[in-house]
Length: 92
Image (cartoon, rainbow, N blue to C red; front, side):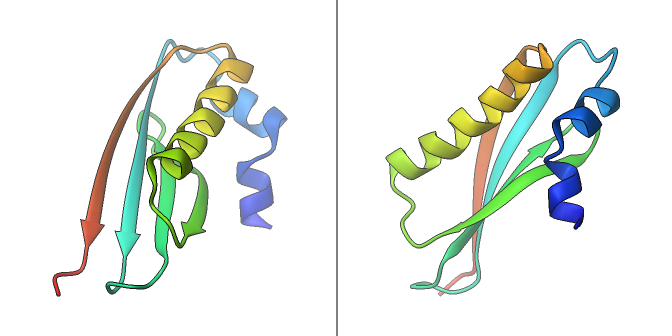
């Protein structure tokens, strides 16, 4: 239920009313080598997770798809955004 609420366009519009710009981050968390990496897209000014996806492949295409989805959300809100990324992997 929380995931559905986080993706509700009206809830996001209310949450970000009056916000001038967004700072988006994509974090990749891989518990062990060979396992799926969980990518979480977060908005940092309101400290809110927008969505997450577990990916077996971390190809540039897959990451670009997640970034495009986040940018689309920002465009729907009518707010310009900046994007950053980092990946955390458990040491072997």
